[in-house]
Length: 377
Image (cartoon, rainbow, N blue to C red; front, top):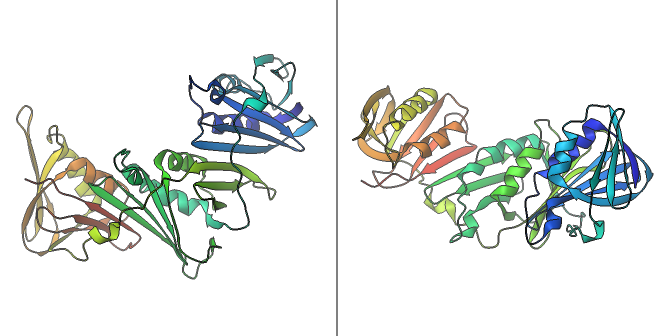
């Protein structure tokens, strides 16, 4: 193996793939990344057997070949490289990296010992704008519950329909749903004849968010019986840049739409930033349970909390109120998480009494909703 590549490209490939690796005492080969010099491309791969990643970058290849090298060590070394280009070759199971003023040698491992990352049929796929899917995932991913009892809520639920996508996450105490609509718009291609739904583990979703940039570029999604592949492309040629492969979580996602109230007994409209600020202030006195109390009257909402050891807070905020007066307790952090993903200046907060699910919606934006359960008094 012998190749030359731009240093910034090599750094990029190593940095992206190294994140998937970790110390593995039973399978030490998983602590490594696999470097492959192909015709005109350098390919770098990593896997922990549940999540796999492959990166391609343009290079000048003099001799094809491959070697597995320790990921953390190589990432440390590439962080010190400053030359415009580097040359690298494999010699006696060692990766030799040459620059203008330096030379390093990293002892590697036989490439054939590296696990095989699954391949996919690419005849049928879903294509979507990467910026839209990234923004959607960021608004729901932190709501996931890492539950062993209910593994189906340990990931984000993707539902692809004819002209829209729904992204859903829940931890049983709250739920977030983001709808991305493409009716009459470009940026979405679904080659499946029926609606497609699957659950992706939270860690895989977070890695996907990390590799997607803010540019409006296509990402393709391929499915197998138990796994999923997310694929991005190089900017200048029609060739993959990153493949992220993950297992799907088995099981049926909860029928979450059944718990979303159709309307609220009490509805308030408030300024989002002021409401969020007061929730955080009251949360200082929320104690170990993070409990705050909302008391809704005809023209305002009162937010209070009390901690026997440090004190109490009582704040008021003007609101437009419809329906009956109500007093209800919430975990303030749950409310803050939902509000943080809303971009509109005002929100609609719908209550179902003091023990039913409440819904927070952005004013003027039907694409997002957040359901939160109150603390029963």
